[in-house]
Length: 374
Image 1 (cartoon, rainbow, N blue to C red):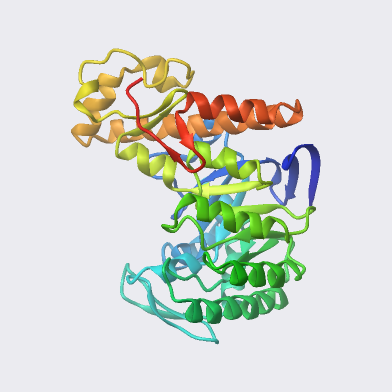
Image 2 (cartoon, rainbow, N blue to C red):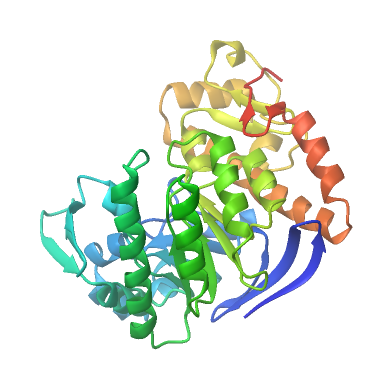
């Protein structure tokens, strides 16, 4: 299921075997909430080199619905993506007022933002939904809390997450891999408690949830330090919600294997584009006449074919082509960055690679960076 092949410090390369193939870690997953990444087709994902993506089981359950997905025997044929697909449980939607009505020990009452219909889902129901969607890796239902939730309330949600995790395991009957999710916010003792409890259960992997929600990055890294001392070394570790290039590299250096985030594509749509010399805000006036590609050191078709001035104009006009080109570039940058990271780990040169990348990317300190005109 998961086998580590190389390590360099805490960073490691491994292979995660699933029903639809094997994907090499560390890897990043674009977020395909509705069975698509915004502005990016499944064909694009293949050309970008992505072997894994993540969709959302609750959203797909609500629309297009299980009857549609069942006609295709699951999500892979429905969206014509034949590699690895994860599905989140819907726990993240508990943060949204447009989805959440209430949650208790029994489960969660959701409201569809599409038609207003109400759906009470127990942990067992969530597992059945994910199984019918037929993803390769599915998530246990967790009780997700907003950043800043009082400790007493967070403690209750940690306990609920553990009890729901046990129920998910009991309900799970397929060959899909099932990951448990830890919570605890930024409270060291709660983070430790949750990680110990979820790690003690027979999950195929451990996801770290409840971070990248607004806390300062040094605090996030502190919680990762707490978690990684507890999670068994042989288990794949999935940090949910992180997709900034330098944060990916920092977290990989702590032993994290799997990531997902809307960050690269979402920021691209707002004109924040990655380059090997830092992040640029290409919608700024400074780029109106700039003939250079987004990143002279990038070989994606966008950088080979279009100028910063063109991307600037298309984004400022909110044209779909600009949104697509910017999104494609950022996702390409992340894909190739992870290729380089895996190569550096295999060559035992990851620390050197990390220092060089941080210096060139203009990272000022652990957890912060500056925008530049490059």
